[in-house]
Image (tube, rainbow, N blue to C red; front, side):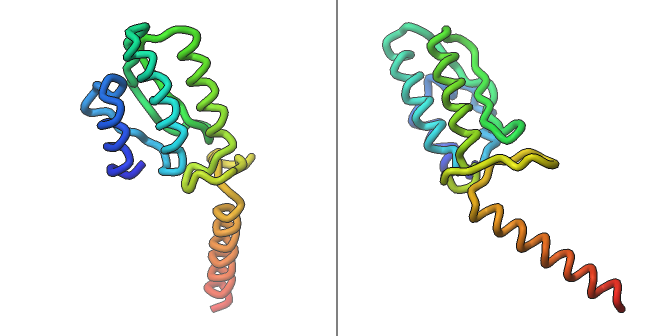
Length: 133
């Protein structure tokens, strides 16, 4: 995630992002998912029901992973919902997306997958030209 967006989350949710060396290792497209999740968690933190602190935020197997200390089953449910939504949201732009089923699993929108297909075709074409020389 871009530093600018990461810092917005850190500034908005200081009770969750206590660790100063934490890095959000996802694409920008999941910013709104994280913002919504953290908003819900921080509201509960303010009610002093819990003290939830993020320990790691990253992409894994094409989905968001939000690891934390503290909380209860409700926080676990919020986190599971956010992670499930990420599996259908483009990590790059936030549009509806799908996961590929080969190689490194990523969740991307149709525009992204089309761009990747064009890049792959251009690469294959350049290899054919190179091999003919």
